[in-house]
Amino acid sequence: MAPLRVVGISFDHMHMGDLLRLVHDHPGAEIVGIFDRDPAKMAGAVANFAIPPDRVFTDFDACMATKPDLAILCAATAEHADYTERLAAYGVHVFVEKPFAASIADARRMAAAVAGTGKLLAINWPLAWVPSHVTAKRLIDQGMIGRLNEVHFYDGNRGPLYHLADKVAVTPEEVERQKPTSWWYKRASGGGSLLDYLGYGATLGTWYMNGEAPLEVTCTVDQTEGIEVDQHSITVCRYARGLSRMETRWGTFTDPWVIQPQPKCGFVFVGSDGTIASEDYARHVTVQSRARPEPHMIPADPLPVGRRNAIEYVLSCITENRPIEGPLDPALCLTAQRIVDTAALSAAQKRTLDLIP
Image 1 (cartoon, rainbow, N blue to C red):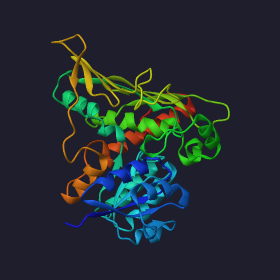
Image 2 (cartoon, rainbow, N blue to C red):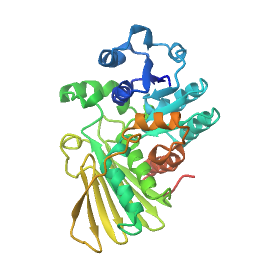
Image 3 (cartoon, rainbow, N blue to C red):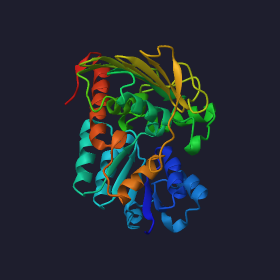
Image 4 (cartoon, rainbow, N blue to C red):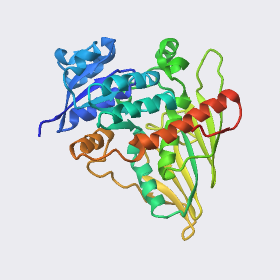
């Protein structure tokens, strides 16, 4: 079988370099084109993956003329819907790097555009590929902690400008220089820690809850002089069975993939018969149960072939004609987007709101 043809569309999100690396290393795929309006943003990928000049584009339609099978989209959040509709017109599978969209209306536009083509739409949440979080899902589904009643999520990093592709570190001085012009810090572009990270907690939380949606949402965000977006948010979701909390933070003391900060980034699950703590990038989960109430570690399951990373998974779905499932499923992500939208509106209005339909 010929390799699947993949293009990278927009380098606004630094994860593009990580995703292209996964394509480059996959034996069944090849990078046939990359596009960004600014050639400088593509320079790192060109060098890292030896992409020839005739596969580097500043014109969107010229890039799509390479006839790709799959497009990876890493645009600013506010541009996701427009780009997805443009990609859908070319009849390609669409892979969107988180977050899903700037609003539930945009998310529904995206789902509708791709549904009309018969192609796949996948929304990638990198925490879905953390073995400890996948192991926690298995243990919850197996009933280890009884009925899941609460999901507690705390996550973030030092800030979105502190690292490039492959987690290459940036100096604090360079971060401050970039803030005034970076889309991450512009409300109109979909910036802010809430849109960046709440989708993780809401999406994986909905996955852990087997699709159940909360009844009400209450959210508050910080307000920093000179910064128009939030860098810290706390969201409380009231489900029929109880309360769950989802907290996002730009400004953790350390980045969790290097050194876990305090509070630690990850999830804590409270069930009727036990608890599970699953830290980001940990090699184990920590469990309490009725039979064994003292906290004890269970090793994280290795991810199986075909599900070891987002690109491998989506490419296998394409070649095997399987639907997208789990946290990447647009239907599940739509429920999470409703939580995100309600949280943003709750913070703006400073009151508890029913979940947006």
